Amino acid sequence: MIELLKKLAGIDRRFIYAAVFLATAIPILTKATMKVEPLPEVRKAYEYIESLPESSVVMVSIDYDAASMPELQPMLEAFLHHSFSKNLRVIMLGHWPLGLPLGQQALEKVAGQYNKEYGVDYVFLGYRPGVAAVIINLGKDFRTVFSSDYAYTPIDSLPLMREVSNYKNVKLLLGLEAGAVGDAWVQYGYARYNLPIILGSTAVSTPDYYPYMQANQVISVIGGLRGAADYETLLGITGEASIGMLPQSVIHLVIIAFIIIGNIGFLVLRRAKK
Amino acid sequence: MKKEIPLAITFISGVLLVLALFIPHKPFGNLEEIFNDWYIIVSGFTFLLGIDSLLGYNFGKLKRKEKDAPYALVLILSFFITLTWGIVEIVRTPEHNPFGPTSTFSLYFYNSIFIPLQATMFAILSFFIASAAYRAFRAKEINSALLLVSAVLVMLGRIPLGQSAAPYVITVIFLIFAVYFFAESAGVTEPKIKIAYILVALIFVALIYPLGFVYFRQHIPEFADWIMNVPQMAGKRGIMIGIALGGIAMSIRIILGIERTYMK
Image 1: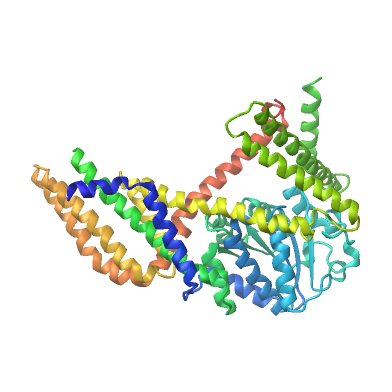
Image 2: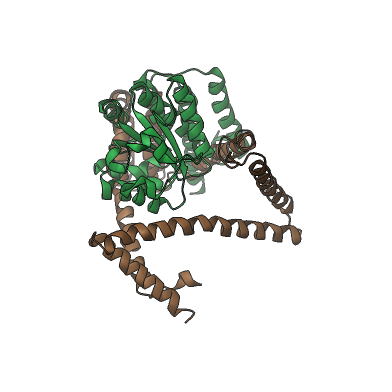
């Protein structure tokens, strides 16, 4: 028995990999959803967007790429559903060039579902290099950074953009963050121009943004797949994030089980050495 | 002069930008905007430097016939196929943005190759994280035990199944600690220490029901939030303030020309 317990401290990693694979794949294949009780911070973000008057201009920054797509794409789609259903107008840009097509695909997909018109209800600006410099200059005048949209259409020929000169005309920025661009949005967008910000981040980046939320420098933080599922729940839609809750729950429990098993083996081994 | 000119440019740019922030009036007020425009343009050119560096490095691997030369070849081929296709599309349809996300080839390449590859790379992390958690989260001492318990509670608190699973996970963890302390007491000869060990073991057993089945069953999400909002945030703030102070100190050193490693 003791020998068996000692072995628990050194389980072959291939066994762990197989367990992780099964714990993820089986729940994904079932496509079952789970009821989630939305976290207070997600509810706060939802209520802020709800409170925006019709036709308000909101901005989305795509600061992620395909690696973070499972967590942030459902968040983006939920936000677009929320915005278009409330007749908010959306400007999209981004600081991660390889992630921008993800943003554009979601924008066109959801805008199409609500019969929204390009240039009037939504605009896709694209990418400019220089993160902090771009954020600062947008606060002065959008035209200093984007004279045209992604398709080379002059922005002054787009009815929506004729009404927007700088952050004063923007009621909210949703920054979808997989890295450190969220810090730049807070440090320059909020601190210098009082831009209202909600950050949607990967679970691994979420702790980095909590201090901004507690200091009221951002309205709220929507964290990880759970945050996206909470947002979908508040909107009453079943998206990818809601479907992801069961696999995520199971894999968390599997990891906890491995941690416990590893500790049993470790403690037995340590005692045996004594 | 080779050193003095860059140092002078750095000093003048740094001082002007600091002045521009604190004196938002002409002539300083516009300076930041102008400098930022220059910065955006220069940032664009860094892509060229990046391409030069990337290709140079990978051509070098091919030349030296290194072990991973086939991967370098794949990278070089992918780069030139994408570039050539982009140029062909410019020639065929000049009004169309060949590198834009709606370009047929780019879209195909992006959706069918790039997204699956990058998503796969990131998905592999979950296997490593599970394996690393199993090996790293060991209760070697009080600090690591606290880290381990916090990690487990946050993981439980953030999943929908957390509330129903929490009592059983807590029971198992507390029983492990109880058995451990009880077993430790067997090897101790000093009566007072022996009693202390047994008492600790009994406390763990006694806490299973009130903590696991009463408190955490109801409040595990709030407890996970507390961990995130108080101890986690305090640590994070300390780190952020430290980084910010370090950043200011480093900036002053660079502006004054004390720190010159960036010129090497």
